[in-house]
Image (cartoon, rainbow, N blue to C red; front, side, top):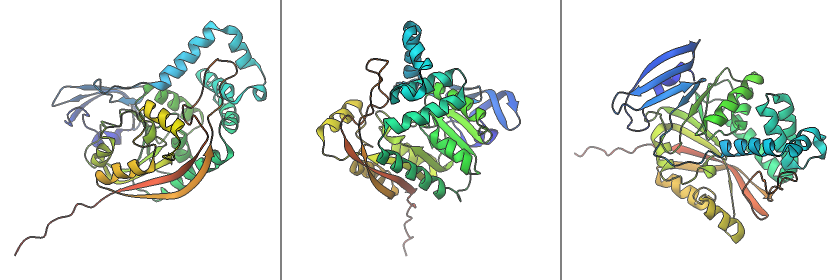
Length: 343
């Protein structure tokens, strides 16, 4: 993480001031440090350049760690499957298996090959309409940010596709965030390999309780991140607390009819941001002015299963063919009204 973030950060547990002890720094980048809250004495480390501000009382499942660790364990115990996954011509693999090969190649540091495999997988995993809508939202968001001031904080960055695009096309400092330190370590290695890490900082925290001071963040983005936050609770209120400017969120909304997908969405606990109406209601209740821009419709189908690893899939949704409404949700902080003094 870069040193400029110190002035933006506070204790996510009690909002107290942090005292920093920096033990390794390279230029403006802090590689190893510890932040201690001067109020509640909670401590937060910086390791491998990643500031870790996770709260032990917030339940979470690190799906990135589960998927990557589970894949590695499976292949260790099924060497014949690994030989086929890594030895067969890429074009002969099913799309899901092309993606799993990309993950293995990443773990082995073969990033150029991994990128080719992941891009090949994408065209088989998703419909052409899905991919066209997704590409359009990325381009719209990045172009919208060309004139933004200050650092851009990306929430629920995951594998960092949006961060990678912004690093290629925008001059601003970027902050990639996720609650999974594992995926952030992966993102660091990936961005370093492709020469895009220079302006990127990495922070691990839960978006439901962020380590930013009130109003410290001017611009926030997220790429399908809202819908993937389980049990979001007061997420939007927390966004309103830390944000002084604008959130740009790539979203896709499911139609409210269609029981198969609705049942799966309920089971996964993803109702609040899977549909247009409750999403807009959450943001309005938190005091945001919201617009949906670049709205498009596109067909989506369940992603095909692996042919080599029984039952393995890439995406849990949709479970039945549907038409998604894509957009960039633009949420601006409403001005606080002041009462005029009486006569």
